[in-house]
Length: 272
Image (cartoon, rainbow, N blue to C red; front, top):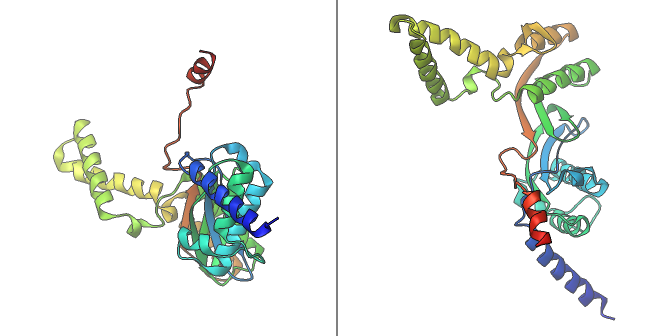
């Protein structure tokens, strides 16, 4: 009849269960991105689970969205800090909510990472949570629907092409030097004289920028212009200014080594 002791025991069992599941690979789940025009804060977050099936679970999706709201409103420094914060209108912390979801859903669930940006942003989620993009702008046009449509185009381009850099100055010098060396060797292997190899390489580096820097990339909806020109054209048409400041792209499970199940071997071991 001691309800407080019963709750304590159940919580201890829950923590033990969650700890056991924590060692299992979680590379599925979902990426979510959202923007609050009133508070001018955008968030992109990745929460992982063990199976893709869980990403369609309403309770899991609601938890991801609640974590996003907490990040927007309370601005935690990192995932560890986020876990200590209380959910909106609740006495439960995000860590306690996460533990509860592990118990009810039955899988290892982990908040892997998030990014929070202040100011004018556009958020985009692709393929039901496979990819999330958040783009941050310096603009006086954020309230216009035409700007939001433009921002979605930019975010979709980043999602589709997996753009690593915003502009040429963001590319690390060591990356450029490595690319030049590889390109130079390719040119020489093709039989071109060494004295003209460097000129050819400079042309190839220009192509590298066009492929890897967002502002230099051809706009996928109109390959006659690049993203920089599309941005300038949009700003002119809307009578204001637009500058892309930064962006982040999360892809679900990227960099996580997924477990490869041998189902044939598993079945064979069960019938022995």
